Length: 438
Image (cartoon, rainbow, N blue to C red; front, side, top):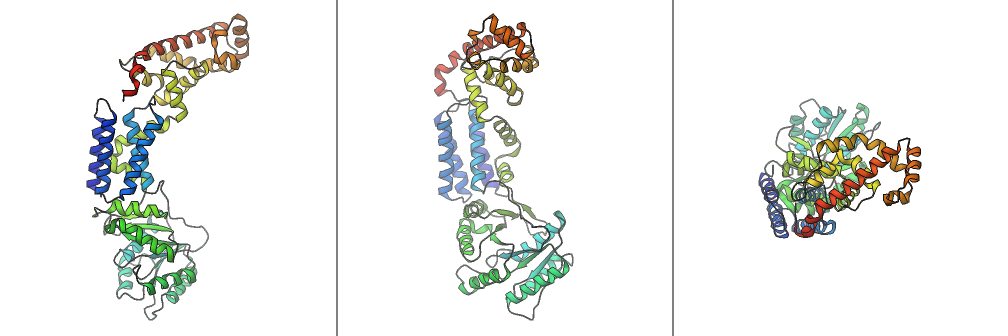
């Protein structure tokens, strides 16, 4: 599925991650490769430019961030941008409990609509344990009913009435039939139509008005690429599109274009067809789809690192490496150190790979809870400037925190030592930080 675009995107990521240092020149080359990959995948040029411009803007606005490498940030921003293009978070077909849910399928002739109806019927029965039926609402195409019979294989109940040539009457009868059977979901197949065929589009509008379905489902062929947007918009004017299913994703070089075009319309893509078999359909998850395109194993670890470290934590880390942090920020950083790699990762990212000893770090972690109590007992003025802590202040804080004066003095000593050490280590590094890209 979209092997070419996936290979190109992964090559671009490999290019940027293998650089010893990443300058503006390498970033520009990386973004050009991303643009080429997406345009080759038939993604709208405007969306491609928007993605790369947003990446550049984000990198410029955030500047240097500590605890997360520039390479990881570039990868993560690419991942976020692609997910956004494809519709954001995963959406599912919403089944309303304790009532008959009616879903009307629509699409142009040849899009794979009838086959998709059969696939979704089996999917809902097998994977969601639903009582599901199908209505053969296409009264124009010879063989439509027979095709559904073959797809459903007597496993899914089917309503049809070949003696009638009025789709609305057949569908209404089918809904009554589904209610009597106590079904939870009924899928309505309709005649394929083209956006320029006014009579058929008008009939679709009449079907929606008369039937008042739970939602409509538009079936789009991935082979049409960016033209998917025009189709979706045309159908949306006639009958509000609730969900989209994209077929033939297994053999289409234009799949990226279809997915991005439809997602921009606003209707969520809920399934993609990945083959002719009755089970060859899968729920569409933009996050997993992008992960697959970019190389899932590496991406998962990067996403995990970036998401675990909040913006606030990154700002604290920045203050840490500059030696400009209060005793309270010192404790906050220690409390989050195990989760984000904390001081060790920050220091190891600086030239020379300087690190506090493992033994010192372990001792600090053991004492963090006690130190938190001490800091909580300090006044705001004392937290901002510990140099004002004289003997009387130390006694008061010790009593208030349930610790000893020795504990208070030790915290102050360790804080001052860490501040001095980190500032000394980073002094040379920040002299040329504007050109340093880790």
